[in-house]
Image (cartoon, rainbow, N blue to C red; front, side):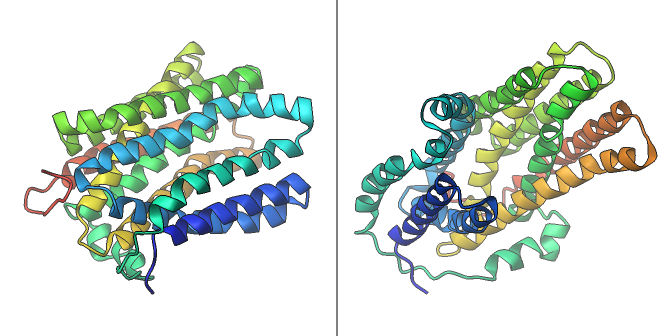
Amino acid sequence: MKLKPARPFTRTLGASRSNMLVIGGGYGVYALSLLFQPTRWSRTPAYHNLLAIMPAPAWGLCFALTSAAWVVPAIVGPGLGAYVAGVAGWRWVFAGFLPLIAVAAGLILPALDSRPSDRRGDVWGALRLLFSRATLRASAGMHAAFVAFGLLHAAFFGADAYVALMLTEVRGMSLQLASVCITLGAVGWSVAAILAPALLGRFGRARVVFAGATACLAGALSLLAVALGAPVPLAFAGCLISGAGIGLGYPTLSVVTLGFSNDGDEGAVSSAALLAAIGGIIAGVLACGASLAVAARTGLPLQAALAYTFAVSALFATALAVVSPRINPRSVRDRTLP
């Protein structure tokens, strides 16, 4: 099936508009959950077509900016949403996005309508890439990058999902202050993502990803220390450092995976990377949270359960540091290099 670059963006914007209408109308969270899926499905072809019209050396900056673009709303969104809800009602927090979607369509679609693509989509290509023996072995190059993508997301989100629980239930902090701690992670992510392209050009991909792994490890160990009784401000530093870790790793690994692709299969490669990231999030949250399920059934103290949680996150970060040198083979063609 041939795709035009405008089509995936149209699907994305249409799904987003439907989401805002449904939740703004108060029709129920289950309908919203169903309508949210097309937004996720259309994200990969949207990236594919965006990169298809950009030169490969600019991909690093592209991923850095898009990464920062969706992290920044996580910083300003809660406060702005609370203000709108207080002034106009909670439905307008969502319905108020409709004019912004129209503006986005007006800016993006005219630039894409005149750029038809003759590339064909491969539905199963991503699955074949991700679940190949080469990926299971973390073979040097693209497949090691898939593994690194999963480990990066497991390390960060495995810890991030339980920071608020640790701060409120173990250390007695208010939910508002715990939210500030999590927000610092978004700040670190955004700033590091913007710096990542320059660092990539200076130090190389393997070192940047290793630095991201080290930052995630330091953040997880900081949270582990706080769970065991270290001063609470260390958690704020840990979240900021962990955010910087994934901010360095995410755009770098995005560029790496696409750099190993061939002309025409960028969609399959980017889809495989997205699946690896989603799998990493699921694996990280489940593995790091397993101790909480045990605590609920056996009476294990929550403090000890959360210490296990952050220790597992640190193990994921350590594994990422081990894998990171394998994403930089010299024998593989890379379109992102001059």
